[in-house]
Length: 291
Image 1 (spheres, rainbow, N blue to C red):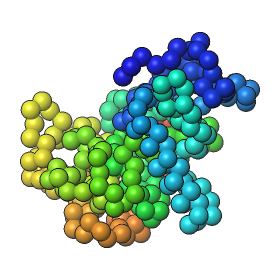
Image 2 (cartoon, one colour):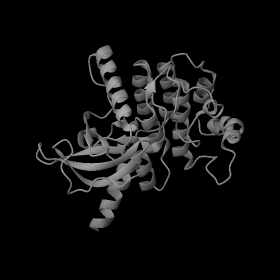
Image 3 (tube, rainbow, N blue to C red):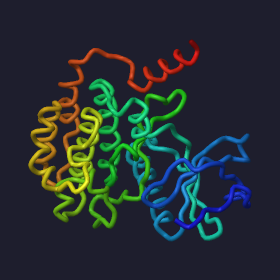
Image 4 (cartoon, one colour):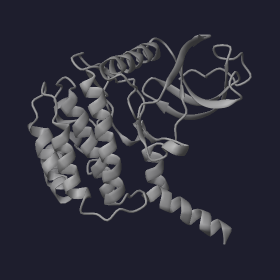
């Protein structure tokens, strides 16, 4: 990407001052920025050249408005869109600042989550997908880098981020997740549907339970391994009934989210409630540091 504006450049929207880069998405880089009109409140700014980010902000705003119209409230687990701005040759989106991504937390926990943490996260991700799908949208890029935790009082709330691949359900897709995370049907060149978001959701939970994806190796035939190995792998990880349901789901059918949640809870209810892995690890590190 072209070098972004310097932090001492004029304020974005006469309001926001870039501080530091914290990530990158399908359509741009993400920075922490200071809101100079709100006591220096830190927010997130995503910026990029070209029209992709402007289109992303319009689609995300449309989803929020459609959900609000249908339900009379804002969707849980989706960041507030503060505004969209043009800055020099960049388009910028200002968002509420969230916590670390699940990929960052996975690294923090030595690349393994317990079943309790995995199913806790998986149930919330499913709820977010239900919000998107019932409003008439699909995410298109479900993976740990595109899922975060909230902050402070919402530190146990899961958020979906990176809406560069967000589209109304029946829109032909020009964006999709990388090969590692996309569905078998997407490998076959079929249009992205709600079913495909759910398959990526299952890969995400399997990744957390196993520590890696079976097909994440140099030269691996990703498509073939998903077709031949994923069904057995999902059964071994106690995700088999979920896998069978998602694979049998017709592409235009609205998923039965209550049924999916019952299948998920049939596993999670067997596990004694416990602290989430990243909270436990954080407390352990603090204790070591103070000893």
